[in-house]
Image 1 (cartoon, rainbow, N blue to C red):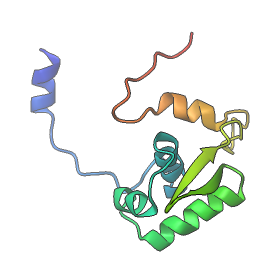
Image 2: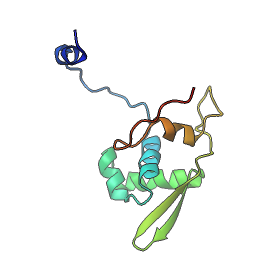
Image 3: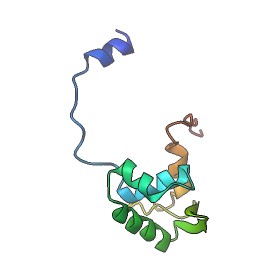
Image 4: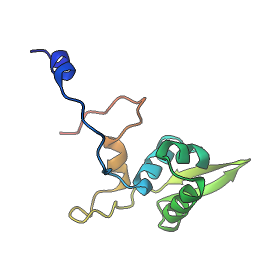
Length: 114
């Protein structure tokens, strides 16, 4: 049976009631893939308010994960990719590792290092 046949015969599954990443993590990923992204664009993608987006970006900046600079009417962000993710079991994994395994939807996935 081919993969296409299996996919066609698979039952429809309802969307999960949870997300593996918080809105903070998702915001950081969106900014990493577009360093000039607007607050309203982040809010639209995450389906949250612009006010909530502003709080999340402020939290990320306060924690040192990103720095905001004004560039005309927009912000330009820079990331501190060497900071740890704060995982409970693997404290040595940093933002750079997360970005490496979660490329933007228009980037090809990189092969994992052996």
